[in-house]
Length: 110
Image (cartoon, rainbow, N blue to C red):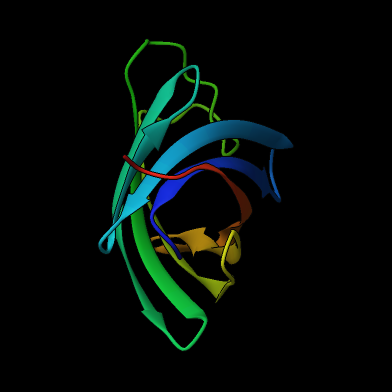
């Protein structure tokens, strides 16, 4: 995943979809949406990506794609090219709660 600011779309098997923005740089990612902040780490090996991401609510409006949760961790894997990525996985400890995340680079970092 090349450094930059990405628009992300996420879809769960529970409650539909959502949109957000993340900054990707040197193995770390940070971002958010209207109600949650994201932070995490990722590794790239020849176009294959693994990531661990934590989402935490900051508004009190518990509207995650997994339902009424304040904080949760995701284990993700997938692929990346120069300006896009596609990851899928599940909530840590809950293989029944699955998510797919796609990202499109919108801006280079300064």
